Length: 321
Image (cartoon, rainbow, N blue to C red; front, side):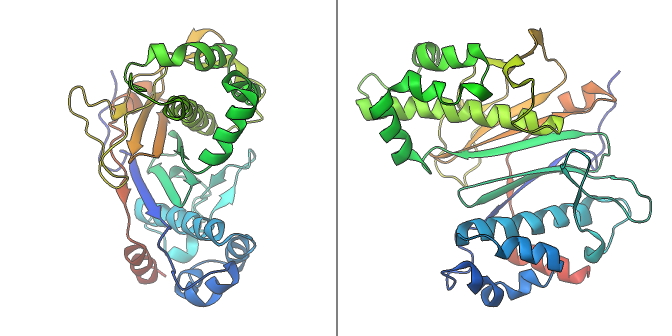
């Protein structure tokens, strides 16, 4: 029988939105002044990793990633470690982890994703839980994508990414997705709208696969990528606003929790996945597995992500230094 998860075991799902951070900064180096309070909470190595980015937007997401991972550890670890003890390292697979200096264990599982200004984290107080998250933004590269598709065609665009898709997924995207997903585009859709609908399906698949692969601790160079297949996937419908939680009511279709996942032809039945919309452009996929008791993760509700305030994170960190 599956165990009932405690409140502490249930995953937290958080987002930091960096798009409006430090409006007075126009270059990465300006963060040394404008973000001095946040940078003071990091180690010299972490600060250097933030400031090495050429683009300010990337540096802000790197800063948010450092903060949100430490915040999760400080909040969830049973030992209630001080902020200074929450530095993140990497395991043998180069996956970010936290090792409790008192026990040499990693009692908090987490995963982070960032895209187009948003940094998302899923975490829980369990050493054995496997978690993955991926944020995609359909509009970030829209002009580039449309240009490539206009020049090469949709099948060729899909084939450019075939190395990380299963053959069945590529075929579904190229030839079936419009008829397989009612409402993906309207009957009166323009040619441009049709391309946008196809791209939404493309990025939905990308998010699902990335979240699953990150759950395993592997990377997109994993040798088995083509043996992983999401069948008859569909993107969720856009929400009213990126910060507006998706409607999970019957028939809303802004959240997709059904996933037909096959690995080497065998149905995967131990991974809980959720794909939800954040406004018109963002989608976020979450994956969870508990190998010691598969029913535990399957019973989790992977709900809406809570949007954290930067000031609240900084105040908490300063109180735990």
